[in-house]
Image (cartoon, rainbow, N blue to C red; front, side, top):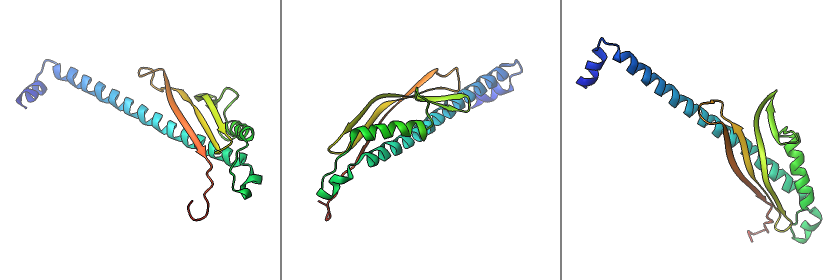
Length: 160
């Protein structure tokens, strides 16, 4: 403690340099934390909207004519088509799956695979959200992977 007190009372200017280094360290740490929480928020928002779109697509593609017979079947083509419509209309993505806020690019969805199975009715979306850091000194491009799946299970009365 006495060493720190002696440094702060020093009249040679060492204290000023120490304070500048400390402020720079605190600002850098703050920038990193702000960017981390911004990326986490973006990821959560996109993942939520994608999950809603996958769920909507599965519900849209269900073959109702088989439900009364106790079968749950999915029209895979209709579900995939509905998913792409959702991406363009509801998420407002362009043809390259880019999202813009006004004229500013926000992120791009890189869809690696869309798998739909007729029985059990399932739609799976696998890909990466590609975006940029707002602080150029941190990182350039950030890739956030996602895996979203929706299944429509038929539950018989009584729980079986």
